[in-house]
Image (cartoon, rainbow over all chains, first blue to last red):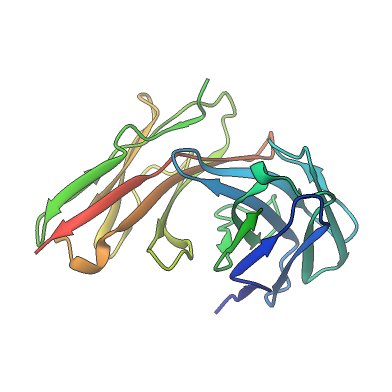
Length: 115
Length: 114
């Protein structure tokens, strides 16, 4: 079974803090993704990575950065957390884009509150 | 324009009845995939079913089937014989393979009544 593990289920941070959200997958997947989920808006893609040290912006990258130094780990960084970044953050991984049915497997999510 | 539209924010269904969750999509990419995910209250997204744009047959996975109408750009999820454990949020998603883009709908909250 694919396992995608997010380091924290719940996180509370202060405005202006630098926040790291970590995600690790154990299936040797090339692709990894970070989404945020807000009520009524579904999931919105922040960043994704299709290989080590490679990244592409999603639909809402402002205020976020990412790091992928190893294939199994994809980190989301909030350089200076703000209250409008309070949300549920979901990490996912999948097989490469060239293959059909590249199902995304998700972690359990991190609920971040910025006070 | 919305790429994925789920028009039913919430639905109720009686246990053991069938239910259809609506999804319409918008793309100019001829090569795409459509996915349905379930998200229980625990938060984890669970893959349910996949339909490729070139697939001739509607996808089925156990009690789940996908009613794929390509000309109408709709990909409705049908759950047969609903169970209490089906109560969850359901998300429709699309992958555009040539454009390398991913989109999720806003979700439908399904409540199964005993």
